[in-house]
Length: 232
Image 1 (cartoon, rainbow, N blue to C red):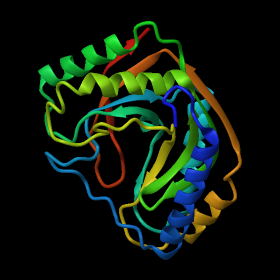
Image 2 (cartoon, helix red, strand yellow; image 1 turned 45 degrees about the vertical axis):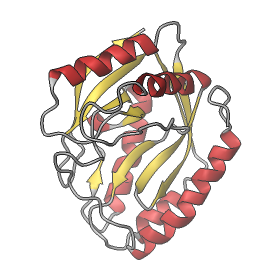
Image 3 (cartoon, rainbow, N blue to C red; image 1 turned 30 degrees about the vertical axis):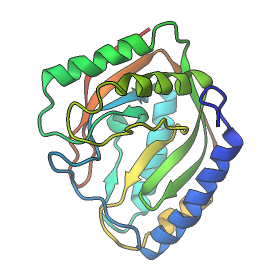
């Protein structure tokens, strides 16, 4: 797949395949619960994201709340203030992020957006995998180009902090996470809700702003904190 020519048909197929496995895991409770990260672990680290706001953010928040209301177990459910689309996950989790790392990644982002048009994504259908539930998203070429530039900027330096994040890969999707499983309990009602909404048109986002954020997750919430945003 070309980085500047998104293959949405392949992405739709991939989303469907993920939910084939995810549906079984949620109905049977056979997914692996995601623990709260500790310093140095690879997930939930420093990330570059688009925060969801306005009517679109409100609509996705309604979906997140509806799913949470159907769950039998206690999981990480995304509150409205935590909803986002990840542009790139840059590092693993740290209790404290040093200022030189913040400056480094903000500098990379500022250079990467030079001459770039608006990044955008359209969202159609709920979905999920063994790792969680999300809204299916489809990126525009500018979003993929931004990811390519950020990936290339990483090559000479690698990670400044804990290994993790996207590494040398470029994401080809644009999903918005709404739930991360915490308890290995069957969630058939939630799975049925996803099945009923795999083709719902949720609209789109288009923007010229990306935020550098840090995660502070607990058992029930993502607790995403914005460090700084860059507009172009």
